[in-house]
Length: 307
Image 1: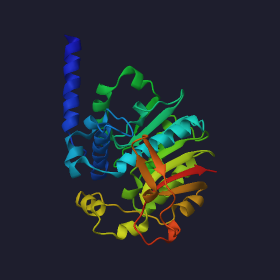
Image 2: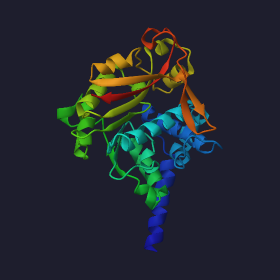
Image 3: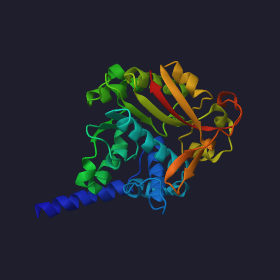
Image 4: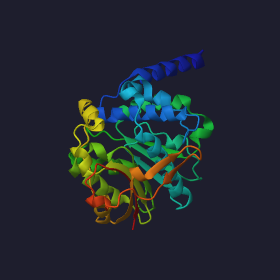
């Protein structure tokens, strides 16, 4: 009877979490992204599997733009391949997902032994994610890596870290076992769009400070020209949702070089989804104009190594 009561209580938590809405507009986009991953999971020639995504998306995720966010398909696959390359080919054993949202790499990718995955996000988001995810996990999925959830309460920081969000999350990360002396793999997926220029600068500087030589970072972004496209649905619909895009940069490679990174910048027009072979294919560049000088609205995938 005690077991049945515990099971019923867990089911109640699960149902409450599935129906609950994320209070923060930016954090709530994580459920929209999960909805697109759920759609991809059901595709007959999917690029990745994510059996958790539909549940994590919940009603909230499918309610915004019918749960469709096309960039998520290639971005998730790119991020998966990036993470596996870091762990298998570069020997990195700590992965940091900054602004993790409803990401599930820690419980679906086949990591080599000894990897720790740190997921950082707001407590309200984990209050929804964890009851849903924990209910679904199989023992073998729990053993894929050492998953460490790091809630960061930006609204109620300790007095000594008030007004320094980058210092706050960095302190939480290191207290959770992150070792800045060892190389690390950083994922800032779907994050920098929503930060103002000063916050992006501080975030990347903090990542650089915490990154030992050989560390790798991946993030997606738009160039500054994109933010001038006031009629683009990305800008119009997200602004109406109270989570406008605030940052873009025309030369991320130069920006990262100043922080000690060597970067590769991919123009998404040159990236093709190959469903026949379940991979992404990089084509010869469309643009003959160097990306920093382009006048077009562009989206980039940026990967960089700490020198």
